[in-house]
Length: 102
Image (cartoon, rainbow, N blue to C red; front, side):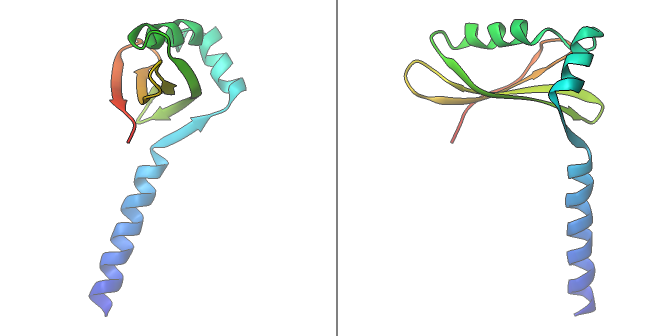
């Protein structure tokens, strides 16, 4: 029983550590980072993604800080109705993820 409790605590601590490394940023903080030049203009990032999915639309965006990097996450629906999860490095515009949503 003691071993099961220990294993469970380790799993919970690992999960909490992973969650602590990702932080959603609010709109005010995102604008400050953009204005400071820390992250690229969101319109530029949006256009970059829409160029990959012509005729698509952006359903949702969010800016997160993960492991010291700013990640811009987008949910896209392309012209055929297929949904995509896209992630960009918000500071450089580098594509990190462009996968069809399950």
